[in-house]
Image (tube, rainbow, N blue to C red; front, side):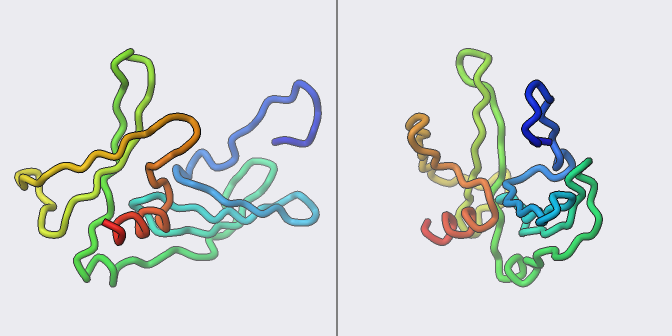
Length: 135
């Protein structure tokens, strides 16, 4: 919680929802709406307690079944460690249509993370859809 008390520890309120979040607090500050997604998970909207983060009610769950039936394949998230054996590197792999098995041989296009001034790896469902349709 971030109520302005000096020295108070920051508490993660969405530990059960790994993804990119957009939140809106209620006027009283006791609740918040949490809209979140990942590149491989359609948007979810939940009402949560601002005290402990527990889900009070799931309001919406994105349904991408028609998209998947139309041959869409969500990107594959990955994580590795850099050459220094310390730095965490995160990314996503977009496979071309028809190349969705491990035995498929396809050309690779690498987009480089160019530094702290720009991030090119999509993190949300919407960013992944935009990136995949642009390819």
